[in-house]
Length: 235
Image: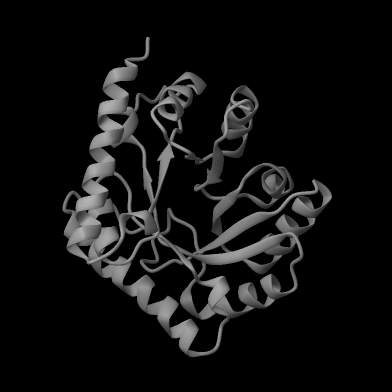
């Protein structure tokens, strides 16, 4: 049983915290998009959040996402893939998602472009940048970004629009700040080296525990799950 009132209250609370963080940074809250991460939660949870005005939803796994996309196809919502994308799932992903946050190599860019074009649609891409070198996480190292941007320049249906980072887990939100600041610095460095600004408009940074810090550091997309839907129960 879904408590839609409680979910709506949590969602409103997250929006309020986001707005206050933007205010502290002298930013317009409208420049930050809230992506509600619905992994492990049902399509009915998505419907409840959508009824409360939420538009953008994110999933970690392609297969789970495809089921929810089908179950909520009547809703005016957008779907984001925020988890690691395996190459064998790329063709399905390029045909279904509005934005993919986890691109980490040039071949993936090309495959996503081809699949989006075959489906007669467009898809926005973000490059996941590996700043911590954690063995359990994915992403492209800073020195490996150039080939990804080169591949994106040749795309017709996929558009590279920015960068994403997943910092090491920490109980202290301030622990993530250096990683958010570093990603912003990488973005600024790419712009200074002449990369087209249209490829660097978005910074996907921040989750439930640290999204306010991320907003203070320039995030344009925050990926918030448990603070909206409640604690997850993994089977």
